[in-house]
Amino acid sequence: MKVINDPVAIQKLKQAERLVVLTGAGVSAESGIPTFRGEEGLWKKLSPEELASFEAFYNNTAVVSEWYQHRREIIHNTEPNPGHHALAELQKLAPTFDLITQNVDGLHQRAGSSDVVELHGNIMENYCVNCNLQYSQEEFDDIFRHNPNHIPHCYCGGLIRPNVVWFGEALPEESIEKAYQASKQSDVFLSVGTSAQVSPASNLPRVAKQNNSYLIEINKTVTAISDIVDLHLEGLSGEILPMFLDDYKLLRNDK
Ligand code: BJW
Ligand code: ZN
Image 1 (cartoon, protein in one colour):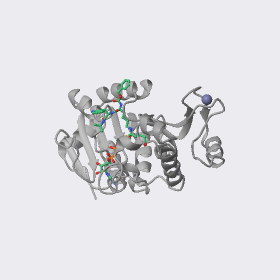
Image 2: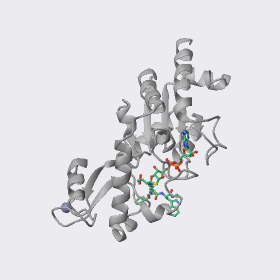
Image 3: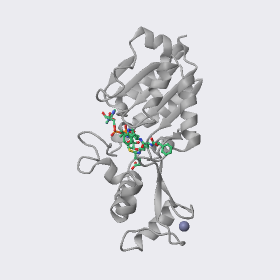
Image 4: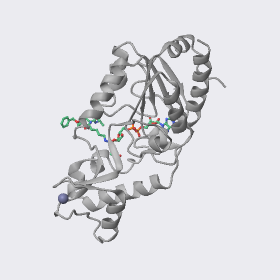
């Protein structure tokens, strides 16, 4: 079954030199990782700021650290889904391809994607807020397991936090800079499985559009950017992305 039927979309994809994809929690939903917002979202009971801020971590270190350990366990026991795999294959076919993700789960890399731009960090990495010492997941697990209070401390006495970006914190400079540049230069920009509510990531499709990129959205529902996209493909990314890949292969061979 074809998903790219629109004649303009076909033309744009045939000609596109630079394809940029922005992903959000929705791409990992079919792997069994809960999204943040919405019906099955992680934040139904607690507001985002109650968990995903430095203030929350500082005031409720045990609760927040346990929440991250719980999510790591879920991620550890999941696999990339057909959507992740389709994007990894798309990277090999497109003349220039950039994958920008808001996800911290590392599933794109596990599916074979390379040079992934991680805007919000990686949940498997940890570091000391005092001396910046990095801890691998194994080292962190060890500290966490041997600490009955679930308050992870570094050798220097500082708290150990996940290497993720919380509300009010700056995104890694190199990542956001690369993401803006790629979005500006994109010919086709694909926004997949994100509610597009969190800035600055949510600015990227807008920046792409302002620079005449053709905007495609894949989501199971409408989002904050649906009114500006050129093509909205409604459904599950684990189903639509493999079909998108098949269509892309055909239309690139048929220039
Ligand atoms: C499917 C599907 C399927 C489901 N197939 N689709 C007012 C007050 C205070 C702050 C602000 C404010 N206004 C703006 C701000 C800034 C703030 C912000 O944007 N807040 C908004 C919420 C209002 N942003 C920040 O604070 C950022 N930093 C910043 O601006 O810094 C400025 C600064 C500059 C210089 C110095 C200092 C500071 C930082 C944002 C960090 C976001 N962090 C989180 C947590 C990461 C760690 C963790 O994982 O715990 O990142 S929040 C959370 O949201 C996470 C996600 O990456 C991010 C985006 O969520 P995403 O991916 O879109 O998920 P959902 O759940 O929202 O949507 C899922 C979508 O998938 C839905 O649309 C579904 O329909 C769909 N879906 N299943 C296809 N199978
Ligand atoms: Zn330290």
